Image (cartoon, rainbow, N blue to C red; front, side, top):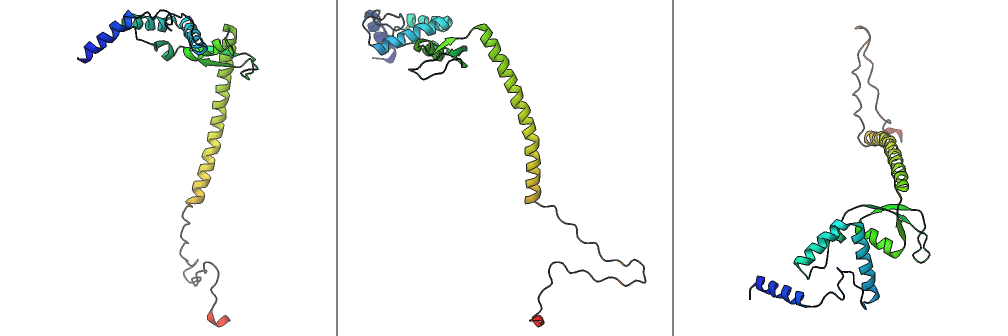
Length: 193
């Protein structure tokens, strides 16, 4: 049996089964365990949030009855969520963040977050822009300090070569040439002991 005929047989067998009773794509919750009911609610909430991805999943399901979904989970559509005070989940209320479709659906079903209002989103974006500008300003200030520190370390690690002393020259041709000055400490002579 070839690979394509095996796939064709599997699809025909799956389509002959009655999958409508507990199908996660249709949202039916007939006598399902609680965890499966939870994931059905998450999937239906995600379908509400991103109907385009849900339509792609439904189209794939019509082509392949074994399709379990995936477009909704992979959707990168952004949603602004606000946390709700929830003692069970130990969350504080009022914090805002962005989430993709699947994360937003889970948070909404769990009851830990709600979708943000347009005024809240505008205030959040304004605050984020101000904070970003303050961080960039601080980084510019720190950049100057870091450059000065790097220059100081470079100078300490690689000191500039000291210029060689100028040769002794007499001020006047008849003046005697001064003797060169010794560099460093004078050596102990053997006779000094």
